[in-house]
Length: 498
Image (tube, rainbow, N blue to C red; front, side, top):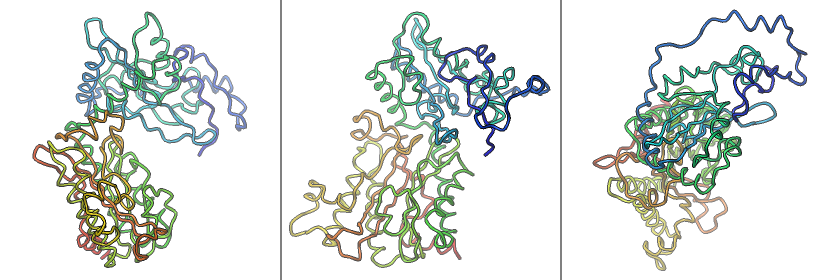
């Protein structure tokens, strides 16, 4: 990484100061930089001789009509109130390096934009409804040298859209975000709600009520429960790219055996970056006993023939919709009899769960159906005493959870655990309707130190997960491009490595 960056001072995403004031502020020199300053001659040279790069004839982004409909629904829910939805700011990783920026899902859902420091504001109108405005960082200033001296200047991190370009792309009037706080706090006070957790500067300046802000967050989470046609296509694309990522991994399992789980993680990540924005969450590349740890993301273990690989991974599209898929694979291409027995039980549970996903069914139905199948197998294998318990009693007491551990699925979309803040009656206690997308992911996990199971079970973990869309007539498996039965998995792996 080139090191002669300087800290950002001309840009101020928290809204203090105007564009003109920023132009007058000098760019501070970097401590321990190799240049002591900028000569007047160089400063003048850098101000001129640049071509006009304004983009003309831009068309609205594909989702513009959908984001407008979402904003209209938000407006109708909060009449007479100002609503503030920030994208978020860069977060420091170490010293002067930052994590890659990922805009807040609430902001992306309402705008289609992904830029840092941005803010969507819905201002109430006296006649009803709201006017929307986007506060964005404009193009880098060239008068004070920000564009080439500042750490977030365009010659360092890339060109931004001008405010005019952003208006054309997003279909919303755009203003300079450095004026946002001044404009939002000027004049007569307006009842205001803010989505918290993304922009500390805005939170401090606006001083909104935390309880009322949470009501806004809950509403926006619930707004994402039913996906529109455009969102469904994004999820299809995410699943298709994820299928390609799993295929890449199987083709490179020999390289993983020679190195570690990191090879698997890196192989899938490469596909995610080629076909999308990134992975939608930290890849779980869990080989051998690591498969019994639900969120194993260290991915530093050995990959050994004869053991299983539990790969839980999803590609996040360039529009930030993510897949969430798990397959458990025999590393040498063939299940042992015990591995197959456990795998087939999980597959049977998943089949029962998927069958329960349909319009008019309850969200809980797929979980209950899958857990019942797993409880039946645990009893049949003698891990739970059938002389003491029947299936109903096992489920009533939750005894199967020693080995099943987690819920059988969750909503999916812009977040891997989408809509997580929605009201309970909208989500976990709700009726399924067409357009909802969720995962079905039963599993069995036998820990290495679990003395209640036969020794040969210990260290085996199996999960199978697919992304299921509720349709008018039932459901569609968006990740069906990957095989699921033990026989099909073996045949698929053999064909890829032939």
